Length: 127
Image 1 (cartoon, helix red, strand yellow):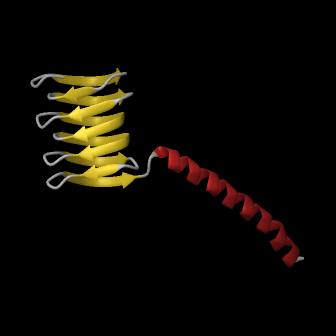
Image 2 (image 1 turned 60 degrees about the vertical axis):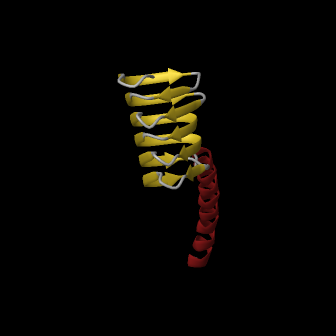
Image 3 (image 1 turned 90 degrees about the vertical axis):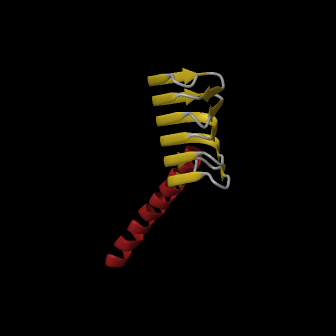
């Protein structure tokens, strides 16, 4: 996407994209997103890999995110592979990729079943 272009809305792409202009909205990519030093994104981004040398504001979901020396990300990142070069800036919070959060839910279910087992023991003690 060329410098000087502005896009607002939702984009879904099956290929790599380099952003030199401005995108505001939701961006879903099957491959890589490269944000050049003139590129600006605001919104929700889903991609396999994100390379930032410009500005991103919002929420990023990716397998790998690289913030280069001129890059700035402000918001929330869901990723297990984050790298920030000297000079790069990240303001916000990071969380594990959503796959691991699903595993955590399974362990909570096990904890809930253990709690259920304890209740009959408490009734036996009370009798």
